[in-house]
Length: 58
Image (cartoon, rainbow, N blue to C red; front, side):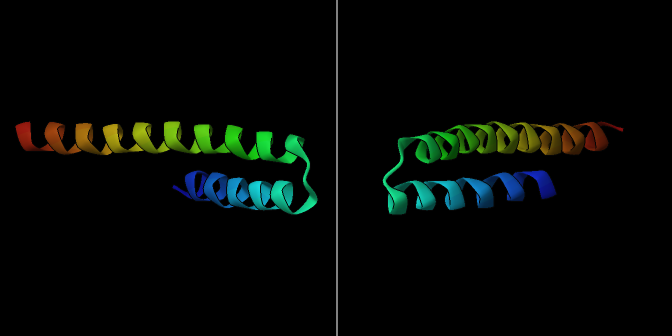
């Protein structure tokens, strides 16, 4: 969960830096981190749901 929050925080920071400095490189890094954040969050949710269903079946 910590990695997911770190990716979200860093993506916001890089996007803000990109817009403030007007450099597309930083915005691109921010967008890449948002994609990583969404992917990690979806995987985390599926893992939690899978653990709940496995615990309920026992």
